[in-house]
Image 1: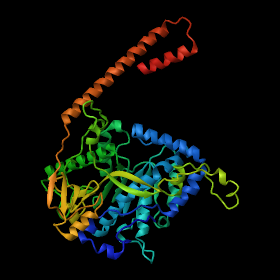
Image 2 (image 1 turned 90 degrees about the vertical axis):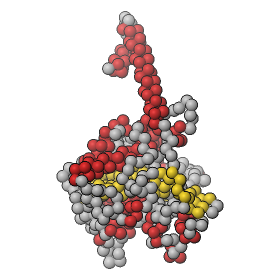
Image 3 (image 1 turned 90 degrees about the horizontal axis):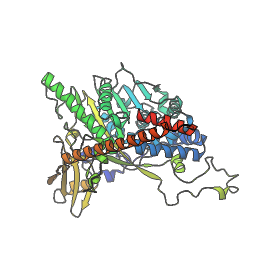
Length: 510
C-alpha cells in the first residue's frame, strides 16, 4: 500500500479550513511511499541476485544512453532486466501513481466502473501494479472492492525483447493480495481487436525522437481504436522533459483535429462543458480543447544555441509536474557507496564492520520525479472541475497576495492570477496552501496574460543554420575519408590493419 497525505489521512480540523471546491481540486499531497510488499520483493528477489557494482555499472550506462538519445534501453539479459528495474521502476511508479490517483478520484465522483484495463510499458507492468495498490486502498473490511474499481479483465503488455521482464512482472504482481481476485494476463504484443475502458501508456507514444511526430500519430490512432464506445479513458504518462512535453502536446493537437473532423461531419458541438461527450475530450491536466500555448512543434528547438542569446534555452518553457517519492532500501543502496548486497546479520556485523561502505551521510532518502501526462476520454461525462484552470508552476507567495501561474479553461492561455488577501480570507488561505498541479476554482482579482515572446522565425533560422552546419561537417568528413581511401589504395603491400581500415571507410561512405 502506498502511503500519502491525502484528504482521508489529514486531520479533520486541517481540512475544515479549506473550501469544499478547493479540496476537490487538490492533487496528491505529501510523499509517495512504495508498498512494503513490492519493495521487499524487489530488494530480496531481484536486486540481491547481483553484485551491487555490476548493477551500478549497467544503470550508469542506461542513464547515459537515456540522456544522450532520449530512448529507453532495450534489455536482453537477466542482469540488464534487473538493472532496468533498479534504475527506472521507482520513478515510473511514482509518476504513474500520481496520475492514476487523480483519475481515481474522478471515477469515484461519477461512479465509473472500468471493467477492462490495458497497461502497456517497457517495465514490469508498472501501471497495473499501481492500479492494484489503488484497489487495495479501496478494500472494505468485508474484503469487497468499491464498485468503481471492480475490473473483470486486466491485460498488461510488456514490450521487451526477452521473457525476463515478464517473469519479474509476474513475481511483483503475485506479491499483491488483490491479484488473486482478478489475475493480470501478461502479453507480449498489443491486442488489435479487444476494447478497453482504461488504457495506461507509460512512455509509449514516442520511443524514438527521430521519428517525431509520425510515430505519435500512428500510436495514437491505434490506441484510440481500442477504447470502448461505452466510456473509455486513455492515460498517457511521459517524462517531464521537453521531449515528453512536446509528445503530450502533439497528442493534444491530434485529439483536437479528431474532434474538429467529427464536428464537421456530424454538425454537433463537442465543446467542454456539456453533460456528455459523444467523442474524444481532454480530461487532464488542462481540460481546454485548444493547442498548448507552449508547444513549439520541433524537438530540435530545445537544443539550439544562439550566439547572441545565451539564455535562449531557459526561455523555452514547457508544462511538467513534480512529485516527491521516498526511496526504498534497494534504491538507497544502489545510489550510495555500499559494496555488499547481502544483509548484515548479528554474527558478522562486528567482524565485518570496518568493511561496510560509508554511504551518503548527508544524502536525502527521497527524490523528485518530474513527469507530464494527458488523460483523454471517449464518450465520458463532464464535471464542473473540467472548467477550472490548472496551476502549472509553484505558486509565488508574496506579502498580502499570491501569484498563481495557470493554464485557463476554455481559452487555453497561460496567465498569472493574483489572489490578494482582500479577495476573501478563505480563498487567500487556500491560495497560500495551493500546490503545483492543483486545480484552482475560485478565480482571481487580477488576471495578467503572459505573452508568448518566442520568435518562431528566429528559431526556424537557427534550425536552418544548424542543419547547414551539419551538412558542411558531413561533407568535410566524407572528403577526408575519400582522401584516406586514395592513400590506402596506393599502398602496395597493405597490412591487416590497412585492410580493416579500408573496409570501415567503405562502410561509412555507403
